[in-house]
Figure 1 (cartoon, one colour):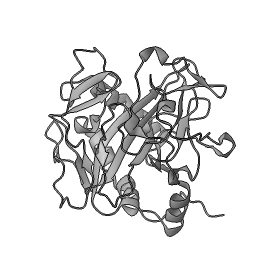
Figure 2: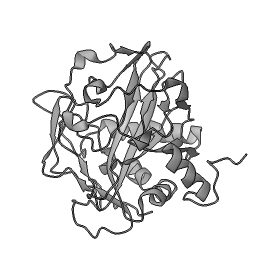
Figure 3: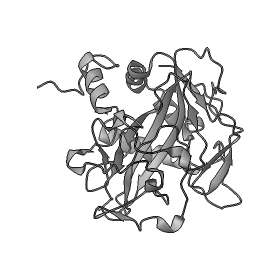
Figure 4: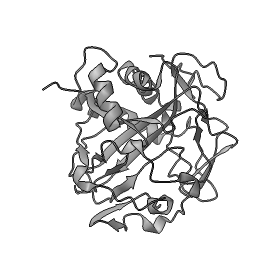
Length: 312
């Protein structure tokens, strides 16, 4: 049996592309060894705590900072290098084409006792504000490619990702309907006998049919620290609860990619999610590969510390 995660090139083999097209994901791939990842995170988290160069200010009206740690690749040097790593970008390029933007990054921490994440799909990321955050050309396929890197161990016990293979071929949610945010729902939602919500949202508010996730077909994406997985945001995905103790955090870092033909945050000056509204005045997408001949989006060539972004 051929191991689909083994390849002699930085990109995807024909077999890997076929697997991805059919299932909506590929991986995991090893980028850093577990001990290397631990050493990296021990250093990087100090910079994450320092918000001197962060793109977003903490919302002074709501007092929340749930999305304030979005896009830290725009100020933390290691994260800026990570989203541009050839081992990642070449694989995404083989899916989306030669001209690529990294338009967002996010941390996904899950502490011991935290609920799992409910099943969901994402196409235009309008679910929180009702406004599309990414808009493809009319002949486009929608969605984004997410690269989810395990900064710590991600096992079933600690809350790893789950996928339903092939579910990216049909959307069961309309994100334009919008969702209501209620922080009181965090860690208090149970579905199908499993504690799982969506960070204060209920994805059921967006459902457009009577689709029920086929749990028996779901696969758990267990990863060691330093490994990453590539998947369509339109793939139905969730995560297990973290059943470890409080000190056993499962930390994922997601970087998201689209072709340069896609418009990012069109007709808006604010990022609105999780009860916060943050200005996009310092935001910019990063051209990680190829050229931008469209000019739809503001491009950042340097991070907030003045360090150039590498090209894959």
